[in-house]
Image 1: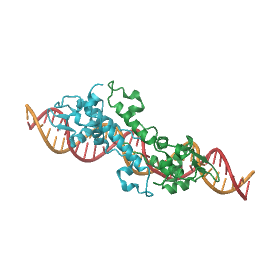
Image 2: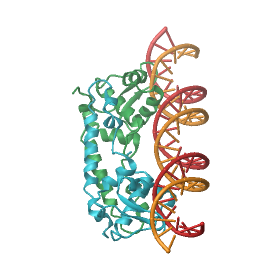
Image 3: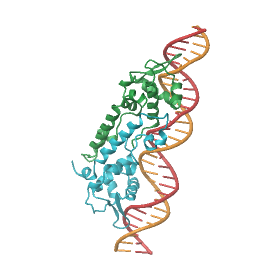
Image 4: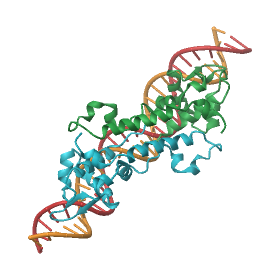
Length: 135
Length: 135
DNA sequence: GGCTAAAAGACAATTTATATCTTTTTAGGA
DNA sequence: TCCTAAAAAGATATAAATTGTCTTTTAGCC
């Protein structure tokens, strides 16, 4: 249960790599993919998603590539994970409350909300800056 | 990310239903399945897993069925979920540390451990007794 | 115009989830 | 002992999600 997918794992690897570079440095997707050991075509899809929401900036053509969209201390792990995995919802009924009307009052529901809150809290407390610094 | 599967959802529904009955009451699988709106054959598989680890007791033949293996206040939601979903591991590298030796020190690893701890903590704090009482 | 590199979309393989069906085992009752 | 009830176990089937790849298009630079 609750496992991050490959996609999520790859997404983190890729963007953490970027976060470790100077903010204005433009990196080739192929270089990033090679550095973090991810299939380039797959990482391309991931970075397209990042790009759409501004987590990274992309540049086409000669000299093109990717750079971080904001300073790494202003990007949380939560944003990164939710960007590619979708919202963190431990149970469908948390996402779609209408789904939870089985037998009126469901006692489990609030538990899942608490789980959701805790997880989001942890991930929201971690920035790409911390993750990219050598520990 | 982190979604409970149907199996997990069904498992909880089924065992919470049992927890709402008198401890020594033997329930037919078919009755439980009907009551909590779960495919009976699927629920059978789930209860087999429960039975193996003693979460429920099973009786075959005439007058057979299932009853709770322990008092509901002594069964946590964590046990139930892990019984059918397997251990709660937000990332493979948390489950298999050898998998995490990519580039030496991985800063994300401890974050996933924290997530794991928080989730397990929440689920461990909830018992079937609470879940089966009307709120 | 020609080269480079990302964007977008279609497609394919594999794995996981979600069941169902059949056969076997165990127990109780006539 | 035989019949019936009910769970256990195993095989199989379908659907959906994951994990990619490939091709074509668009954008930018020389």
